Length: 201
Image (cartoon, rainbow, N blue to C red; front, side):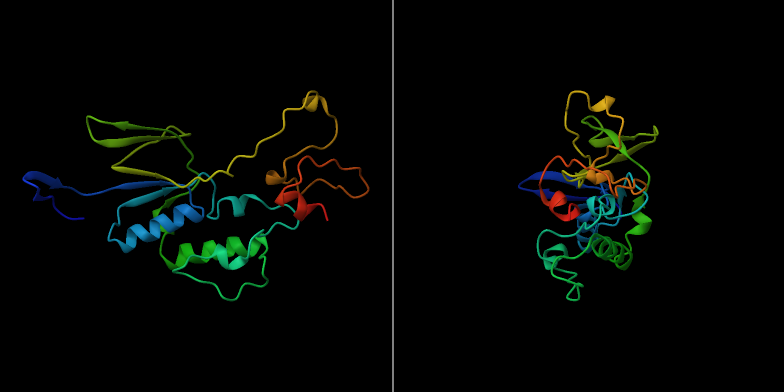
């Protein structure tokens, strides 16, 4: 943002300084935040992404039949519409491809630290900045911390007595086991939300 600039607001001297921003997550929210920061002239931002690519929950959920459960048009940014979705409820690979395209178009990839999971962040009032630590022990600082991790990044497994003793195949739909051959097997599904409605058929 350049050199510090002094100004006065209602008689109080305010000192502007360079602004650095840390964004957690390279899913829909994190990418949009970064794009809007750049549009506002803020270039010093870093997106911390625990995985190796963008897409958030749409990258992680790869169960059979995964796709939108709302009209596809709602899964595109207002500033980057996509009128050519393949169908009304777009499949998961197409949604991920959209976010990958957006990340490239808006030059976000150089600002993303992939494979970097943030496990701790606290505000240092004395230094007036955020101190951030990754799972590998790396430490970072930023003036502003914005969370874009959403609510679907960690699956919730049911607490069922004896589940750990089950000898068969068991996995969460959000972490689909593509090596498991379910053909001809009796399969129990816990839950009947949007995911189950898509993969059960």
